[in-house]
Image (cartoon, rainbow, N blue to C red; front, side, top):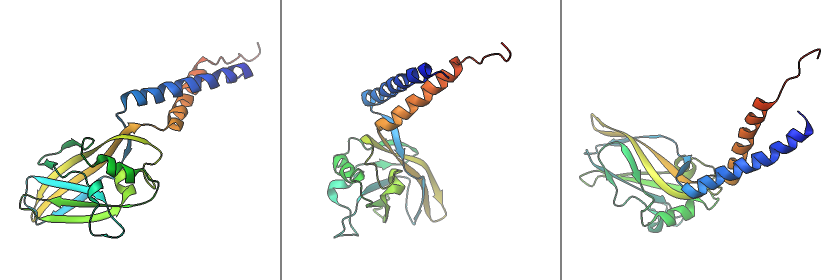
Length: 196
């Protein structure tokens, strides 16, 4: 590869990266992070409809979630599907903790049709898919994927996963642009014949 080709490749990588990042800014609905897929046993629960709320725990009140961060109060589901939480009134409060750069605890509460409450809390990186959190991303939305609701002998089993939508960080877009331009330049490179 001649130096002139290497120099030409850098502006192309920058251009492609900026275009990709701008597209992410324009659309704002790219999945930028996924939490772990969680398999949850709701022992003694009565279905088929369930509610899940989740929010950040207070250090002062570790058994309660902070009301300003608790999402899902109006979300009931009875079948697998994707449920958008981006318009939840507490989304901004949740997001302020999800992007603060500190590892926090997220609490979950499941309610069944008879108001049976089952809850637990875990480190946020399990739900966010980023460590310590999503502070490096511009988050524009959140949704919960309910993958399975299965009746069992004494309750239900659920499989859920959180997804976070937003704009990819500029470094990722630039890296993708560099990769795309590198592939393009290797296709165009001519190999000299031996002995000519």
